[in-house]
Every structure is written in C-alpha cells, then in structure tokens.
Length: 250
View 1 (tube, helix red, strand yellow):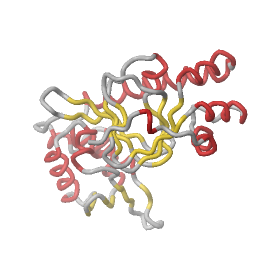
View 2 (cartoon, rainbow, N blue to C red; view 1 turned 30 degrees about the horizontal axis):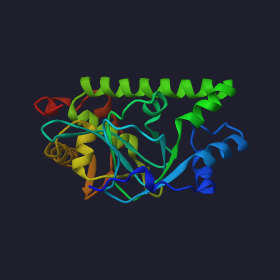
View 3 (tube, one colour; view 1 turned 90 degrees about the horizontal axis):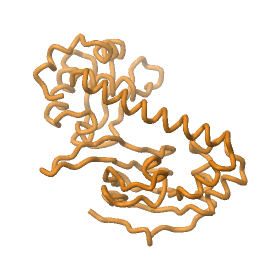
View 4 (cartoon, rainbow, N blue to C red; view 1 turned 135 degrees about the vertical axis):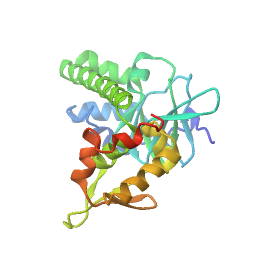
C-alpha cells in the first residue's frame, strides 16, 4: 500500500476555499475567514489504495474529503481489520485527534481516488479564540459526532446482523424514476461493507440472499434493488428476521 508523506501536500487556495466553504463545520464562517483557512491549508491527491494516515502518527490537520472515499479502520495484531467509518465528499475526519494534537487512533486509506483538504489545527483554534459563535458551533458538532458514534456502538451491540444489514439498506436507498422501487449502490466491496457492519463477508452474502429470497431485494453485484422498503424497515426496527440471525456473528 502506498503512503503519502506531507511533502506531497500542495497549495491550492482557490480549490481548498471551495471545499472548506461547503463543509457544515465552516459553512457559517465569513468569506474572509474561509479564505484565511484556505490560505493556511493544503490539498492532497491520494490515488486508490494510498494510505493517507497511519495509526500512532500525528495528523497534519483536519481532513476534508472533496471527492472520493476514505476508509478509516482499526487493525488487530492478527491482521484482522475493522472498518469504523467510510468518509465521503463533504465530510471530515481526524477532527478531535488533530485539535488535541494526539496520535491517530486509526489507519485511513483511499478506497477511490481522492482529493483531500488538510486544515491545520492551529488555524482553526485561532478562529475559535476570536469567534464565539464558531466556537460554540464547533463544540456542538464534535459533541454530536461523539453521541452519534456511541449510538452506533450501542445499536451494533444490541441488534442482530440482519437488522444491521436491513438498516443500512433502508438508510442508503435512492428512488428509481418514481417506479416505487429503490436502489442501493454499495460504495465499497462486500468485504469492506461487512467489516463496516461488524460481520463477516460470508454472513453478509448469506443475509443478502435471505432478503432476496423473501422478495425484499434483488442483488446484482454492488447494486441492490429494494422492492419492499416497508418490509426492510420493519426488520431494521425490531426484527421480523432477527431469529434467523441469532446464530450469526455480531
């Protein structure tokens, strides 16, 4: 896997300004402040498969994804991988770690070709000191992120594998031309998606087959057509299909 060091970072203030301006975290900042952040930030082009950051190493800043998809993962001593988050366009990662100046607790790698903006923590903290409204907004966003993570951990601890799969599909649907059916495009391989859901690839494949046999979905590679979204949502909520998952890994 390739690793991109900080000397590959580039100054592209116009491009970075557009990226920062579209981030929820900075959306309410004035134009001059966004321009100031952009002037101090750098961009990084990471090809598919590149290791963007490594567990135990310092982050150069808060990462914002302009395009592409980044996988954040933990790796066990036995080589196992647990995907904790997939980060797409308009999202950030490494916020708390960078602001606290602590080593990264995860490995981050590019699943697709990516363009990233890297915002130095010092520049963000300077604005925090001078803009109380931004400081409050930043604190609330970090709190929401923490609570969201805890809610996900709790949901994974108390839900069966089939509920997690159904919940993911229900959250990810897009309508198909007003036809009454819905489409889910898996952004990653089934191996990565299974790790993200806390199950094995074989379990994910089996559960997708089970949902397909029930007539709820139809699977074609990474594209999944949802024929019965209410039925899928019912499984996600409580578990018409929970019994079948009790013997699966959680």
